[in-house]
Image (cartoon, rainbow, N blue to C red; front, side):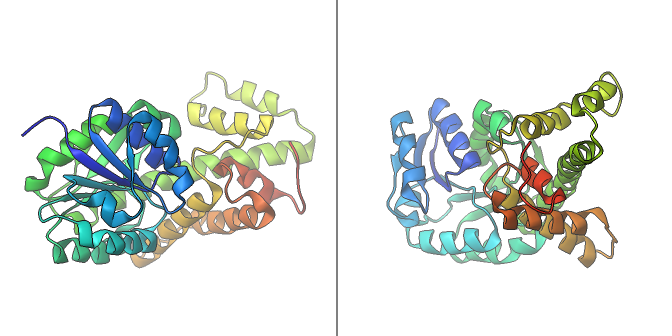
Length: 295
């Protein structure tokens, strides 16, 4: 078996496009598809083949990497891809769908003879572009030779969490991780909004954090976005809201009471309703104000 594979990347948004480029740099043959074709076409200049539909993208592929918004979108896309899906193809499901979203995906894979690997990733745009994601994976042993070649291209490390992709081990850990990510994002946004409301210089807040255990690079990244008004996407408000809903739902199903996650759902929804849904999640800042707030 060679060290490279034919990989179909379905979904070329912020993360999918970056992952496709790292696969191309590693020498893999990459086909890409996106519902809005114009978002996939720039990858042709990097060497990718742009497919007209999901079935064409996956036909003959060793691995299929889904990087889409949510479980229903993944299921719809893979149903469309199924006529081209080869027996034994390895499906690497990297969207954040939550543990409850895995069963129909795994069933579809089994129906078409594909090997299903639940493989959410930790990291945003910059580590994705650098091939420095951390992959959380669960799936059968026979899928791992192909899966690991893909993971080695897109990530700095892979944590295998079992052989049952539908068991939810990887997706559950991803929700725990994202719960903390959303806590930092919303906490930063609320603190800077409070500073604005109280007439406090936000730079004094950031200076007070310097050198303390409370400081973090991620907090500063989100603070910079808010203070400069640059909401270039790493993780959109709408995607964050979707993840917050998954987190709150999973907690409720497990009998765990969360207060911050449900509040985060409402906060992110307000930011989206104010017109910031396709901006970086740091734009949850705007949920703190009755009307449009600038800076």
